[in-house]
Image 1 (tube, one colour):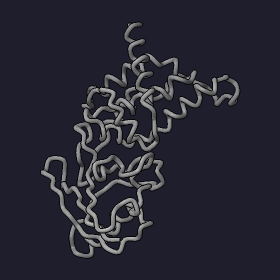
Image 2 (cartoon, rainbow, N blue to C red):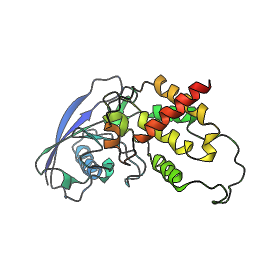
Image 3 (cartoon, one colour):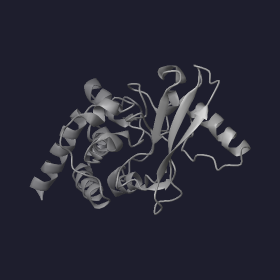
Image 4 (tube, helix red, strand yellow):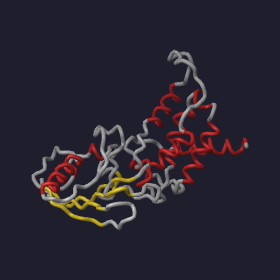
Length: 247
């Protein structure tokens, strides 16, 4: 398979970026999109050009590092998959593939396709943890938790923090990410103690670092590689409003 790869090139956050188009040839249909970029970079290096910078780590759909906007979709043309799980058979032979970094004011470009997602870390540091002492690890059945609550908590905890929800939202909102982090703890006994403080602190930090407001378009859920439900956003709102009423 042969492709024209239209890639965003930008040397740093302050420089002006531009698209550059490269040809890649004789690519197997079973090659992943990231492997195709590896091949492209090998070609560029052999030609004496600078390779394209892009993020990657596990390449197993677990870490969320492979955050690319491919042909207008966060992570590419598949549902419930990260960029590293996209294979070249998903694209038309001889076609053009457009690859961009996440587009969000809170995720400034570092170089080419790499963005700074430190804003997510700041939100987590504001309250996405349990700080109360829980002593030694209790027996798994010591604190009965309804299965429905446990399942809902685990669904929220599956968030990999990739930022697809922000990149696909027309407002650049991080509500699904924050809601998943809050919801994963709100349904468990260990997280209830600091629930009110957590919701207020994380929402405040989300606004501070520059994420937009949620208008419930559902785009974040549609593009989330872990299919996290926007029902968690409703829980975040309840947690936040409840904390404000207590104040």
